[in-house]
Image (cartoon, rainbow, N blue to C red; front, side):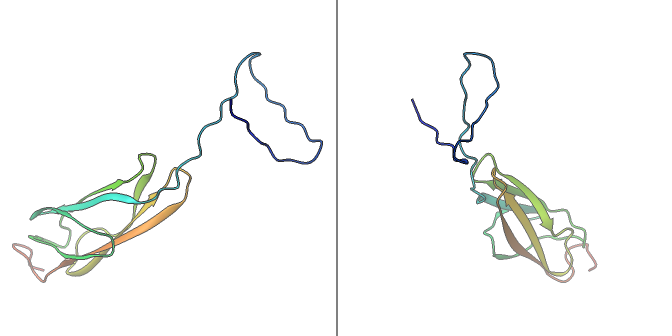
Length: 125
């Protein structure tokens, strides 16, 4: 049997309502892991794994609105990923920033830069 220590004012009491005879359960602490286990993007040239902070040349970009598909996998299954910045694909450097929010609400931001050369097949950029 585990012991739970509850801090409070001297003489304070705690009331727990529940069904008589039921046990009180304490959930484990939520994870603060806001790391990424994998990050990749897909362009006209296929799928490419990336590392946060890296800069990558984009292949076969047809236009300034070329569709990019991103896959970001957090290390902890209880964490979530959201995109903070970056859309479309203009000529030059394009920064994409994502946020990984841990189960406990803490977060970490990660960015990559995708570089599209002038023009591109059929792009006329």
